[in-house]
Length: 128
Image 1 (cartoon, rainbow, N blue to C red):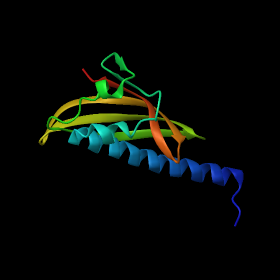
Image 2 (image 1 turned 180 degrees about the vertical axis):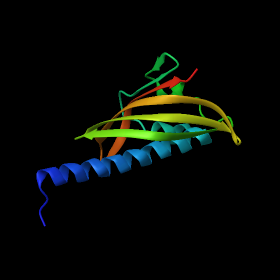
Image 3 (image 1 turned 30 degrees about the vertical axis):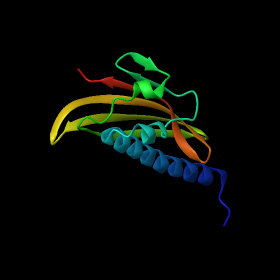
């Protein structure tokens, strides 16, 4: 069975969305476990940025502040896939034990390259 252009576009979008949700889960686990190397692999090979609290980082090693007993969870993922580019907005929740200690919003740009999805930029804004 051959798919129409519209069917293929929808299928590709759904597959992209599923892969981006998995990428975000890998990011969260690596962050929570303090695993810098795995966290870095969720970003584009070159040219990625992280914005947090108004500070922009192009050196991903300098941007990493994970671990330390915090568990990161993201919810309310809104993902738009357009070919090899995608955007995501989601809410980040930081827990220490069972206690919610912080919330904020991620605004992400992603790209499909080397056979997978990667963050090209992640901007995080803490809620006040």
